[in-house]
Length: 105
Image 1: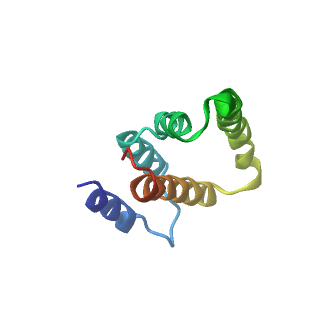
Image 2: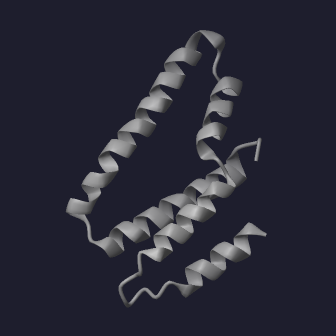
Image 3: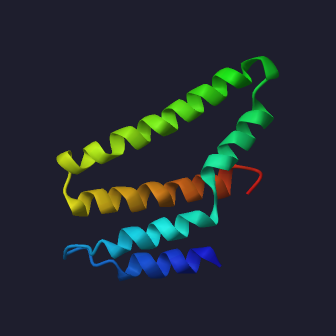
């Protein structure tokens, strides 16, 4: 059911004209279907031996928070169009990784 929605949204994006900011919010709202942060914690607890779990959790949370800290800086380097395409592409890639490679999904 989710894939026709994604295809419908992606078909509607005109690549030759500036993208309206609402498209980013559409992709953001669709990303709530799968909670990737929780799935990552689940995968860590399933795959890591108990003695390495604390370090793995620290690296996972640190990389997530680091990405949140660096993301606003991208606005100074990239155009709004490039950031919108990058954000939609990352969300689509994360969804595909979750669907095809994570057993809990």
